[in-house]
Amino acid sequence: MNRRRVAIGVGGTVVLLAALDAYVVTTILVTVVQDLKIPVNRLERVTPVLTGFLLGYVAAMPLIGQLSDRFGRRPLLQVCLVVFAVGSAVTAVADTVPTLTGGRVVQGLAGGALLPVTMALAGDLWDERKRPVVLGAVGAAQEMGSVLGPLYGAGIAAMLDWRWIFWVNLPLVVAAMVAVHFTVPGGRPKGVRPGVDVVGGLLLAAGLGLLVVGLYNPEPDESALPSWGLPVVGAGVVVLALFVVWEVRTRTRLLDLSGVRRGPLLATLGVSLLSGAALMVTLVDVVLMAKTLLNKDTFEGALMLTRFLVALPVAALLGGMLARRVGDRWPMAAGMAIAALGYVLIANWPADLGDASYGPLPRMDVDLVITGLGLGLVIAPVSSAVLRFVPAAQHGVASAAVVVARMMGMLLGISALSAWGFYRFHALTADLQAPLPFLMSEAEFAKALTVYTGKVQDALRTEYQEIFLITAGLCLIGAFLALAVTSGGDDTEPSPPAPEEALTR
Image: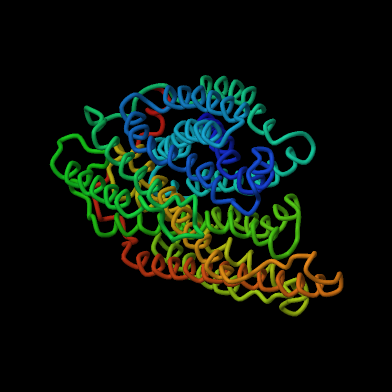
C-alpha cells in the first residue's frame, strides 16, 4: 500500500513539473514579446509560442499512451523526461519566435506523456471504486501546476530573467528520473494489445497541425483568417476524416472501441475538450485583461489569476470524492454549468471593476472562484468515466484520450478565439485615429488622447466580453454532453486491475 502511494506521488510530481511549463508562458508573454523585440500591439505574432507547446502535447500523446501500455510506465516516463530537458534547453537559448516555438513544441511532445501515463499508473494500482479519488489527486497535481506556473514564471522573470524558468528544469529532470527509477513499477501491464498505431498517430498530429496553421493569422487587421486559412483548415478537416476512416478499418488502433458504448465515451471526451478550451481562454485572457484594461503589471496579473487557479485543485479533489459517491455524470454536468455561470459573470464585468462587489466580497474574486470551481469539478469524473469504459489493458491510451481531448480544446480554443478576438479588436478600432500632438494645443491633445484611449478601452472590453460569452456557451454545451454519460458500471465488462501484481512486475 505504501509503495504504490509513493509511486503515484512521484508520478504526480513529474506531472507537476510539466504543468508548470505548460502554463508559465501565460503570464510572461509580454516580457517574452519585449525581449524578442516584438511590438506589444502585435501579440498575435507570438501566438505560436502558446499553441506550439499544446500542439506537441496533443500530437504525441496518443502514441505515447499506447507505447506505455506496451512497454511499461517507467521507461516511457524516463525517455520523456530526457526529451523534456532538451526542449527546455532549446527554449532557454531561443532568440527568435521560430526557435522559441520549436523548443516549446519539443517540451510539449515530452510533457504530453507525463499526465496520461501517471493516470494510467493509477488505473493499474487502484480498483475502480477507489480510483476516482486517486485520479482527483493526480488532477490536482496537474492543476497545482496551473496555480504555481503563472506565479512561478512571473516571479523568476521579475527577479532574474524569463530564460531561467527553463534552465531550472534541467536539475529538476535529473532528480525526477532518479525518483521514477526507484519507485515506479518497471514491468508491462498485463493483457496488452500487440502493435502500435503509428499511421493513426501521424494522421491525428498532421490534422491538428493543419488546423492550427490555418487558424493562425499574423495580420488580423485584414481578416479573421489569413489568405491560406480556409484551404489549410479544409485540408486539416480532410486529414482528420482520413484519421477516422483509418481507425475504423485498421486492426491496431489508437483507441480500440470494440465492446465499448461509444456514445457515453465520446460525450465524456467532448466534455474534456470543451473544458480545455475554457481553461486556456481564461489563463490567457484574464491576464491580458489585467494588463490592458486594469493597468496591472505582469506579477499583479498573475496574482489576479490565482483567484481562479486556486479553486481548480480544490474542486478537482472534491470532484473525485463526489464521483465516488454519486457517479461521474452529475459532477461533470454541474461543473460545466457552474463554469458557464462564471464566464457570464466575467463577461459582464463593469468598467469600474475595482469598486464592484457582492456585499463584503469583491466581485472579481467571487466570479473567478466560481469559474475555477466549476472547471475543477470536471477533472476527476472525466478521467474516471473514460477509464471505466475501457478494459484495464487500455488504461494508458484511454488516459491519453482524456488529455488529448482536453489539450485539443485548449489548442483549438485559443487558436480560434484568439484569431476572432484580434480580428474583432482591429475591426472595432479601424476608424479610430490617434491624435497628433503637433496639430493642436497641449490641452486639446490631452483631451483628445483621453477620448481616444477611452474608445480603445471600450473596444477591448467588447472583445473580451464576446470571448467570455462564447466560452460560457461552450461550457453549457459541455453540461448537456455530460448528461449523456452513464454513471453505472455496466457499460463494459471491465478487467479489474491487480495492484499487488503490478507492483511486483
